[in-house]
Amino acid sequence: MKSWRTLLKSPGLRADGRIDDRSFWIAYVSPLSTPLAIPLVYPRMIAIHDLNLKDMEGFPPSIPLSSEHVSDDGIYLLENGEDCLIYVGNSVDPDTMRQLLGISSVDEILNQQNDSPLSKKLNDVINEIRRQRCSYLRLKLCKKGDSSGMLFFSYMVEDKTPSGVSYVEFLVHVHRQIQTKMS
Image 1 (cartoon, rainbow, N blue to C red):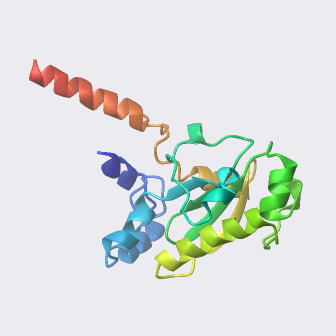
Image 2 (spheres, one colour):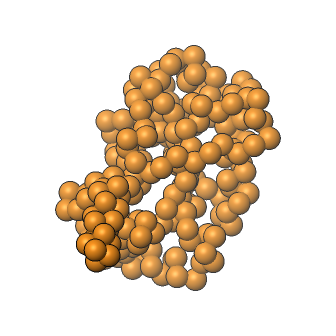
């Protein structure tokens, strides 16, 4: 059920998308193997402000693609097989920003690597994702309040849509229908 809803929210099947973009997406995704097509439909999101230096070997856990899981004091990595988006909230601790990105304010966002251990761990995570994909992922830094932030939140496929329901509401509806049929 989840994959069906996320598929309907993907760029190739969104009702609000341009026909040229939809046609390109379908032609692009159709020949891909399943492991390469899945992130295009359901991207992976990681809370990188929670990276643990003690777990240098392990890959950080993914979190649900819902704006409920994105806080203003967090930094998140979202990868969809083509792009690697790093979203920086407006209230992130300046020390965390300095360690990860080498900046102390969202307004200083630049696309460069810092030499701190936490920044190196972040780059290891990005490089591992790039290794898993056939193409080199483009890195984009996003912040709240501009078009880059809107792009990031457009991937929150579990959120409620203007014309529909959230994923949880959808599951409740399906559960009720099943209960009605069973009784």
